[in-house]
Image (cartoon, rainbow, N blue to C red; front, top):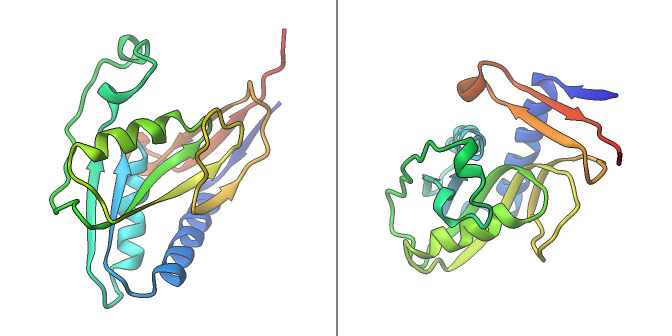
Length: 176
């Protein structure tokens, strides 16, 4: 059985993230760094929601393709894209942003990639969806929505700019 979340659920999850970031950072300068692909779109939406505050707010995009430990993905998706970090990373309060947190391997790769740009003063993690099943000791600081999934389930996030619509589909899988 498949489950879906609509655009309203995604918008509410982004708003939940923005509210939590606003409350915890209390006007301090922050830099949102979205992980390609889709984490960058979530980061842009967060930036738009947080931009009306009186604070320094930066936005960057990080491509982690060459930092991943599962090189098979390059055969399926050989498109490498640029990272764009237009601010000094040294000493910055960075909030990494991703669409789905699963095993933690993407975030490990993002931390490796980010370190090539400098040494942040602080790094936090914001995820649109936390679906559990970590393989690494990585936990989010900010969560838009927590989903209860089985390990084999697939969570497909579609976002307007990248995919033409906002939607999350949970495809339930069972052991053969």
